[in-house]
Length: 371
Image 1 (cartoon, rainbow, N blue to C red):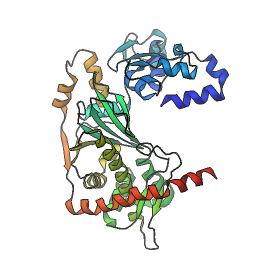
Image 2 (image 1 turned 90 degrees about the horizontal axis):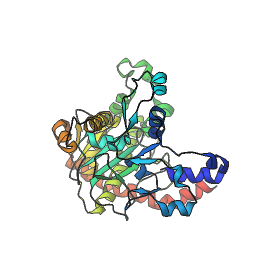
Image 3 (image 1 turned 90 degrees about the vertical axis):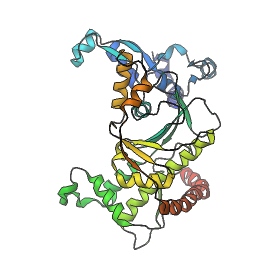
Image 4 (image 1 turned 45 degrees about the vertical axis):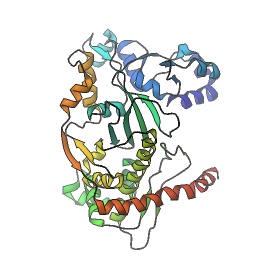
């Protein structure tokens, strides 16, 4: 989301803006250092807020409105384009061989969507790490939803995405701030404290503790920078395991909110793949399946986008002619989590309350933020 950041620079550091040659995304800056060419991949471009969907180029009208010189924006390339080669200076600085081709690249969400098979309309996945992102293949750009439409790294395909601000980060906050000092005494968990949190949540069982996972505000579908995280229903008998379980459930409720919004586009989400660090939590995945009311599948090659990027390189190099076919052949489902009917009924009632709490409290959050 480059536009608000660029506007801040224009308003608060006008001299910096006036002297800026190009505004680059992180991967664009790295590619510039490697090749000497200022570029932006098509996926990143469609996320900037400065992109004209119909013209598939930077928005001339928006640039005029903002008094922005389009010469300060880089050339746009499809993700599968080679934009240059490693320069002699970059080879000396990095140890990479001079002349190695450099790909335009893509964002993590698109690479993760590619590696788990989201390459056509109706295919869906969710990626959970520090934050989460729901991704749905689409062939239209609905403009009435509280989601984000972007180009896919797969040529000619698009994605409807729902970025969720804080999911795994909520667990990390709990781990660091509330109650896991005993990790050092538990050798079995020392290398992976999140497995301990998983076991805590599994053993806690049901409780009436609800968690709003808005610790960094919320992006899709609320787009509310004032809202904050909250535990609701704490009592003197609330255990740490129940708090962890509430964090996992609340994050899954936030995912369902995004999926419900996506289905307003007219596409039905039949099942979805789970990738990212969160896909290593069986407890969380089972919750998601029951809360969403749909099967959730993990894949053998989940690598947080690395395998997806490798596929892009193979396609650009001519080793793969058809990306969609190559992905279909490479997908190996590791495990499928089916919704538990009894849990699903209970979660459906709780999800309604989860949604209501935000509606009842959003004005209070705004008032609190203004103090």
